Length: 78
Image (cartoon, rainbow, N blue to C red; front, side, top):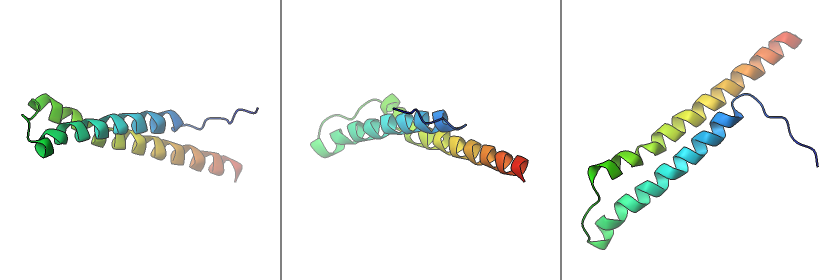
């Protein structure tokens, strides 16, 4: 089994994906009482939903970091 080398930004993309998924699950859980007719969650639960946007930004930063590393590598070859 060969291990693939990790590029700069891969960790940020993975972390961003995990944070995004946590935010998405929190959004589903927070919206469930609206459809079930139960009492809504406290406001802090809605704040956890913002992790979707934070995860998206972290993953985007990882993609930009990867792009910058590829440009630097291409520039050094040329």
